Image (cartoon, rainbow, N blue to C red; front, side, top):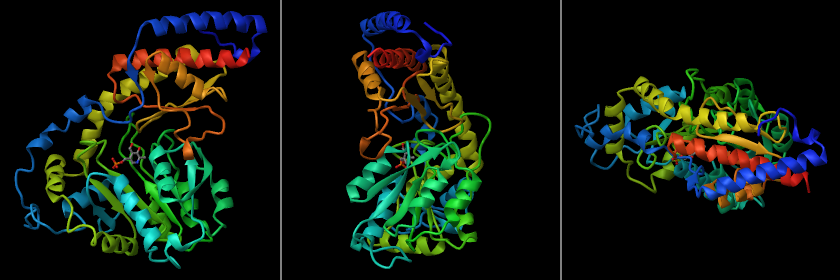
Length: 425
Ligand code: PLP
């Protein structure tokens, strides 16, 4: 049943009739015994196959300078690999460190070092402060929030808008010296797909903060993960911060997890000279050098940043139809009903679905009972607590296209059924 009449405009009798119809559709769905999963924000195996040539590389074991990559050393990573990231991220190569396979690990290292040692401009280690708080744009990336919870950092939420974190809300928080930093996923945010504008980025980098060592963890995980032929450039975080007198504020992260192999890519960090030296000094107590064989393998595979950009277009061709399938299923069944809003992202890995307030958990439960796994409601919020119980993160990249279509047709039924249950209560 598709109708352009908002459900809220229907009479009690019409709502009851519609509930009967949609419940029948749901029972049919359940009877199909589906086994589908939209929870995993990871590449499909066809995407991983694009990088299989990595498995036969590198063809040499010397880098450009002649160093033997099989040996220890080279803590900041291979120069050639750092150049590729610098080009992709729009930063100076001198600011880049290439590490292991996980940017999340680098974020964790930065936070633990800030807690145990403090940053270059910290009055004392963060762990010696009575309380440390972080600003979390919501909805956001669940692992950012669980990492802070694990480390005992309190979370304060601000809205994530279409052009980035809500600046007035952020400004209202940063005059508290306990507020030491914030997360930003600037390009194709997880899960909304929002892109932080240059204006918002400039304000975040320039705003006065009570904490002299305020840090913006600028997680550009999806910088080159475009879903259309518009290849949006990220705001120049490091440049804007330096220009406004806060060069140490941002620390940028990225990786090739969703470019080559999610489990065996290369991660990178970019920061001011002072931050970089601080990070490398800490890292020097934890490692003698990174996996330079993997760096060299990636350098041989891509040649340069344009090689990465070409490669990303192949990913786009594989996953864009899956995002179109999500949009088609939601709009054909739910448009105009006034019970759901969703994003149509131009990049990244997710679709953000907001259902009728108070029904997200019910939608996830209904879907589960029909064999469709969805990310638990609330996971895009600190401590898993969505105050409006309306947010659901959809991850369409991992299942094959047919499964995305089948799962999303089912999700749309669950969204409407949960709304009708709530409206007829
Ligand atoms: N940052 C964001 C915003 C992500 O969505 C993800 C993965 O989903 C990661 C980081 C993980 O990055 P890595 O594989 O480099 O640890």
